[in-house]
Structures are given as structure tokens and as C-alpha cells.
Length: 368
Ligand code: 1HN
Image (tube, rainbow, N blue to C red; front, side, top):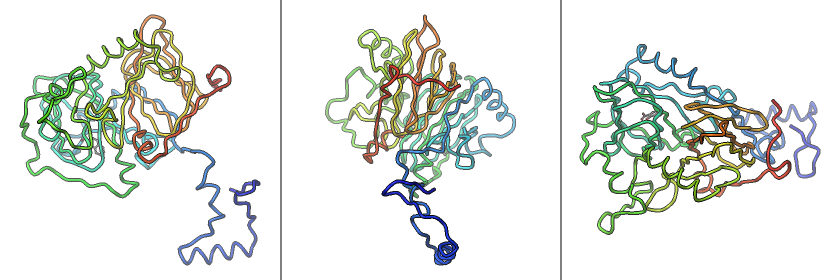
């Protein structure tokens, strides 16, 4: 698209130029000025749209898959979330993938590994487990689990458990864009767990305590593979009594690698945030795409000037550089949002930028 600004491309088509462009095309080339303004936007111009997936609508569809395909045939029985602005890309927002995986008691999905990193947020169920590089973990509602780049992982639900639904999040699409993905099937199909159940929580999930000496951790991701809901929520509640938090995010905590204080994995990060009764945050925007899951309560977010209402287990997305603010609907109870993002990738590549909305007390005027 032409732009009438010095330093930007502003060439009108002529019959002579069109003939020239056709000649270039025959040599697998093109004139940069025909696309320069599009491929060098003044600021991020995501094609992804703010979107809410309502659990009420998704849950029956996810459960329907139980009778339609087996995990053996499907590999993973997952209903994936597709951004309406990005049809055909498998993207939930940006280059993030997300989906809802469902398993009934007695079922399991075989072990594999890939160069993309994955995480899971448990929505509902009982008796589910996952095994990550031989470390078995029990999964309960609100737990957050990581499956870093290159780790073997398989999961299932014990025969005595309940049908379980969890949310998967992966950086797979980013890794594919970078042509850097690999995939492998575990030779034994199901990993043998070689350590006590939940050992990473016992060893690395202590309150500010890490094994002293002899237990060195030198992998590029968190040695703590599971962050349990109970302690996470308790931490948020305590923090909300000790601090006013951020005007843009409320009481927001990052899930960290306890060995470094950095994000849980190199490419993907996750946060949990509490909006106090009646709280409404100010608007800000930043690079990085974010997928939110409502862990507790109800409210709404204003994203790029439009209002999106949400309640427990709904999933919504904020595209990169979109203004966003959140409001708790309740004057009595807190609301909690789990989120994961590619912000660690942005920061690692020095592409992270952040801006606050100044006028109007920092709040957007919803256009709808
Ligand atoms: C994957 O490995 C899982 O391990 C779930 O459960 C969803 C979506 C795309 C690629 C790999 C899993 C996935 C996935």
C-alpha cells in the first residue's frame, strides 16, 4: 500500500512498471517498494483478533470427541482453538497454539517428544497424571505443568478417576516458523516412572528453598515441573494483602524457574493474576501474544476498544500490541486469570516493548 510520507514507498503503477514487475516475477524476484510498507509496519499489526472461547459452548463439543475417536487413533484427543483472523494457521493467537485435551478414566496417550515446548493448565477432572522425562505427576484442577523442549511426555487418567479436560499451550507454530521443530516417538510407548510421584514439587517447590549442593540443575528450563493450584492461590491471596500490585495487571505473579528466577521455559512463560473484588485495571499494551484462562470468578476485559465478558474456564486472547484492561465483575469475590505467552521469546530477542495508555485515567472507551 502506498504512503505519502518521506521514507515510505509511494510508487504509482504504470503499464511500464507492471511489465517490469512481471519480468521480475519470472526470475523469482520482486520490487521491494511494492510491499515495503506492508512488511515494515510502523508498529505491530497482528492479524489475530481478540477472541473468547466460552467453556459453556466448548465443553459439550470436547466431551463429544470421547465417543468419536480414541486417543490411540488420534495420538492426542484435542480440540484446538482457532483464531478467526488466522484461519488455516492452527494459531490461537500470534504463533501460539492452544487446545482442550480430554481423556476418560483408564485411557492414556503414548510418550513422545518435540522441540516445541508445551504447558498444561488443568480445567476439570480427577485422577489424571502426566509423566515428563520419567517424573510422574498427579494433575488436579488449576495445576500448571510444563513439558519443556525435548522432554518425553505421556499422560493418562487412572481407572478410578474422572474424565479430565486440560488446556494445552505450545510454541509449536513459532518453532515451525523458524523451521526448527523435531518430533520423536518413545521406543517403549509409555515411560516408566523412575522417581517418586511429584518429586519435582517435593524437591524444588519449597517456599524459597532449593536443594543445597549435589543437586545442581543445568537444564535451560525449570526443574519444578508442576505448580499446584492450592499454593498458587494462597500465594496470590497473601500477596494481595501485602501489596496493591500493578495498576495494569492487579496482583500478578509469574511462574518461575526457581533455580534462576526467570520464566519456566525459554520460549513460553506463564502468569497468574488476581483481580480483587471490584478491581478494574488501567490499560496497557505490550509486544507478545497472551492466552488467558479464567481460573476463578467472572468479569470482563476491554481489548482493542471492545468489551469481552468472561467467566470461569473461558479462554480469551490478547494479540500483540493490543490495548487491554481487565475488570472483576464481583464486589465481593476475587477473580483469577491464568495466562501463558511468548513474552520470554520476545525478551530473549530484545523485541519486548510496553506502553501505558495515558489519557482518560488509563482506561479505553469501549466502542461496543
Ligand atoms: C502435544 O504433544 C500434546 O503432548 C498436546 O499432549 C497437543 C498439539 C500440537 C502438537 C503437539 C500432548 C499438541 C501436541
